[in-house]
Length: 369
Image (cartoon, rainbow, N blue to C red; front, top):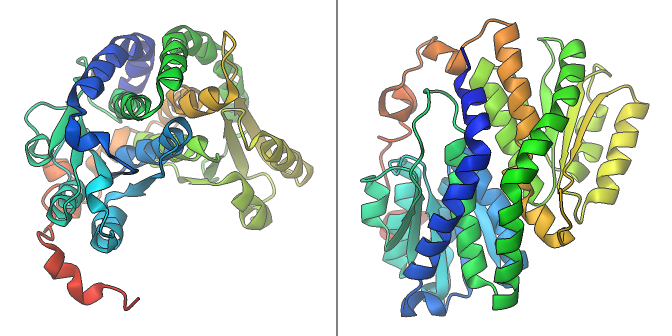
């Protein structure tokens, strides 16, 4: 019986093909007069939503020329929004939450609105509180699939964010983005097939005691974070993500020598450094896997790198799924050890956490500058 991860992976191409026109229509329809003067974009979310926001910030900056950043919802709500300057009305907060119920993301929306910033919710569920609380919303519903770690919700967040980025970009860029997105479903099917051999090779060598480190820079850093998340969620495997350059300054020195790294690349601005790091890792005995996305048709390098998160999940997700099966584990460790499904995480209170409701509550923590 297929797992939830493999089921979603098989649905991904068709989902991207259907979701993009919906996202485009929504983005073009919501930009009223209030959003025409946007001069900065802050994207935020938790978990997979943050990983999407991390990637989207780079793409939106590149396409639109506007400063954009992808932050965690906690960073946005409690550390950035209270310090926005008098131009706050031109700062768009894009709050991403698949469920529309995440406490920290709802908090970010409330504080941004209090500061005078327009807010946009990106969700995959109808009726979520976030959709009601934000000024605008884009909802991309998901097809039914078995419960488990999410992929389609992550793709929905990316697609909605790409639609916002394209809407903010000049007309010529919009056209190129649309042409590139039209290629993704076909490219994804071929790309998934090419990743199987890399996954098989890593599975032959991988040891349960090893952590798994994913590397990526720019938009691929968010993809690396998502890849690590799927390994953790599928089997409890220790995994994390690092920037390509930062690996050379830190994890380069880790022992044992065989510890694996997996480089995810959109073959963009960091390509040369990615290949240097791969060479350095092999020379000290690391187990190295490299996924360099090649499009099936010519695509400008800046666009390929921006859209890369839509495909770079494929190999890592395949690995997470097969490793889970090999060690006899279950998603989210079957919610054992005191963990719970309730409220999006039980005692962790992902959805029921106490929220700060006003900027005045943060006044005492503001810097003196």
